[in-house]
Image (cartoon, rainbow, N blue to C red; front, side, top):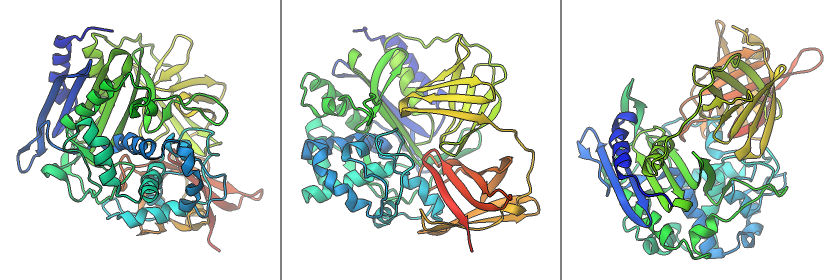
Length: 520
């Protein structure tokens, strides 16, 4: 194992407030089972001048998912014993139901329910109560791929798991977390804090950035098994110490969470039980990040070095980048890459299988891909491909081949010819989705296009809509109930042989290929 580089780690910690500019944050490092660094800076509430401390409880966002899965394993052992209850949450589902393990591994194929709130007319600042979630999840009739075939992030998987644990044990989910996980790990102040309107310890999450400024985020969501835990830095470092203390016990919860997982075809999976298995700078690690409106978090555990890093901000900035920088500094490593200047990588492409647009843009140091909720960066290799985290891009004649290793997905996308403008009048009108039992209305106003969604949560705000190519549009969704918002929804116009519009296909990475038909 590598000796800790204290000087480099201290420099990296000192740089965090400048490199990741925002109201405040916390970061800590555990090496060989001991806390070797902890840092808190800035303010939990800038208006009230409330300092951020290592004891301030912050939402740990989707890091909560591993705790939900740990509690499931603790209470039920084999997830398969609950497989018969999945149908209780998906009574209308026509595809093959996922197993409980596939829910844990994000292999269910279920469209993400937070993304679907946009299509059901939810306003970003709307109150979303506990009782509002399950009806949306229960309305699903199909998935966007067969269970076990691929990876796709879906918060609904973990919402179901949390409800399943509570029903199966007959006990309160929060009480079980406190008794079975937090207390044994020494997480003395960690709690399930599901109501985002009631922040703990006076903490405020902020939207914005250092260029436009920061404003308090208005978040009305009730979280549960997907993102409901709040914990201090000291709590999270206690969790990392507990992981190290139980590292040699094959039955310890973290070792069980970290066990190998597979897709239905036997291919090893890189995500399971709320943990991502990945490689950074040659180091194998398990970890997870998360973001709620106004908050961002990441934890990395490098078992081979007995090293863990935790970073949490009360603003939305890349905590993964911050955590990775601390890992590199602690081990005296630097990320080195020979940048090759990309040529002819600007492009617009269509992934017809998923019904999604890809956009590639090049700069002096690499290629930026717009496909998921946020953009991804890839650097050019000597073989002409571009490689990023769990991602490989390769150009062929009039096509872009994208291998998303972490999703068990290969995409061959055809090149599109961009348009400067398209008349929205032909696509204007009202459309109905049988899958969602929800409406879409497209309005053309003097050459501009707008869309509004209507469903379970009412009639939403007008969304901007832009033409990209012939019969290919995007509807932008930069703000939604959840963070990160879905991003761009791809809208594909479907026509018959006579050129008459017969329907639309709408989707984003989190919720693909949803059909709409013109209202009769």
